[in-house]
Figure 1 (cartoon, rainbow, N blue to C red):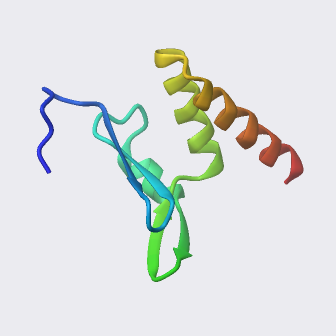
Figure 2 (cartoon, helix red, strand yellow):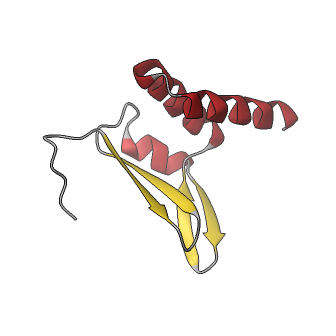
Amino acid sequence: MRLRLDAPATVSFFSPASRLRFDLLFDFPIAASELAGRAVRRKIRSLVLHIASDEDLLQLKRIAHADRALASDAQDIAFLEARRSRS
């Protein structure tokens, strides 16, 4: 794949077959080593994924929402906050 942007901050991929969306971050507002250290391993079908912790996802979503103000980011924030309050 070739990106036609100079220095993109993120790229999103959606797999129709698995119905999973993946966000790749190129310019980390949090150090990658810190994210990786707190990541949770999840097996989805035959893939083992390292997924950012709920706290890191919440922080990243708040940063994204402040930058681009998408309704989907606000929904994700509400979901993650509700999940955190149930824990």
